[in-house]
Length: 198
Image (tube, rainbow, N blue to C red; front, side, top):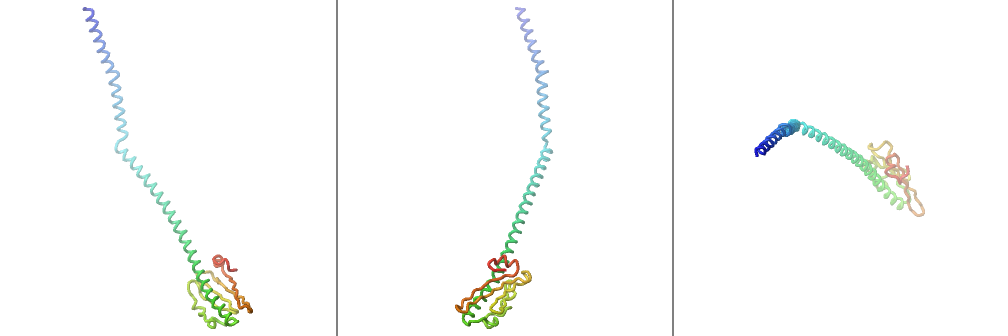
């Protein structure tokens, strides 16, 4: 029995020494390494660095926003220029349409005069039409009645020099019918009044 007790004590002491060695050489170094790794990770994500990253992110976001804003402004400016150009073209066409409308009034009055009298009037007054400068308005400088019922609508300084619409009548004496031909002078008028010959 003595022998058994001695063996038991020896096993217990050996187990205790093995556990002590395991703790000293395995567990403590492992815990120390884990603690060191955790403190290193915490040191790498300090608030100062987090602020630097936020600052960089904020700067990148501001730069992206500035780029988008500049792109939108360029698009808006391009659209505004296109709309202004379109409005200018439409204004010009409206002025040309107004001039053609004024000339039509002369054409109607002259057609009626010819059908009633069988000849063309000597001047606008004889046909009951306003004086050339009285028809001024829009882009029309004057509307002049020429020989044989020719009507010339002269455009003002908003159009190139010499821009005009000319209406020429051709009368059939037997039937009293009057046909009108249109002629334009000036490239812009030719584009806006394609039915008129230039």
